[in-house]
Length: 199
Ligand SMILES: [Fe+2]
Ligand SMILES: [Fe+2]
Image (cartoon, rainbow, N blue to C red; front, side, top):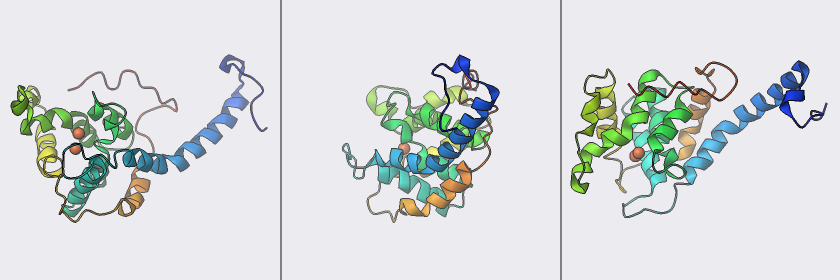
C-alpha cells in the first residue's frame, strides 16, 4: 500500500492506522532533532539590542549547564528554553516546556515552563513590574531549581566573550534525550489536561 484509499479519517480501518502509524512514527523520530535544530536557528541573526543573538544565548545557556555537570535533561532544557520565542513571543516558556515535556523529568519541565516569570526577577522592576512575581510559587518544590536556572543559565548568558560550544556538540545529547520513550501517554500528540495545573 502506497497510501490509504480514503480522504476522511472515519473511513479508515485498523490496518490503515497501523500502516499510517508506522510511517508517522519513523518519520517524526528521524526528523525531530533536525527540526529542533532548525527551529533554534530561527533565533540566529537579530541581536535586538543585546550583544549576542538568541541562538548564541541558547548555546551559551546549554554550554554553561554542561560545564556545570547538569543532567542531560537540564542541558537540553537550557538549549531549548527560548526556542518558542520566534513563534510564541507571548508565552515562549510554555511552548518550550510543552515540546520538552514527553522527554524530560518533572523538575526540568517545570523549570522551563516558569523560567520567563522567574527571569523577571532580574528586570521586571525596571519596567514597572514586580520582580518578585515568582514568589507566588515560593512553596513549590521546584522554586529553587527554577531560580537557580535563571541565575546560572539564563540571566548571565549574554556574554559575547564566553567560549560557547557549537550546536554540533549538543546533537548527540539531543538524539539521546529525544530518543527516549515519550512520558506522555498515548500516540496522539494531544494532552488537553496535562498543562492546566501550573503548580
Ligand atoms: Fe526565556
Ligand atoms: Fe533565555
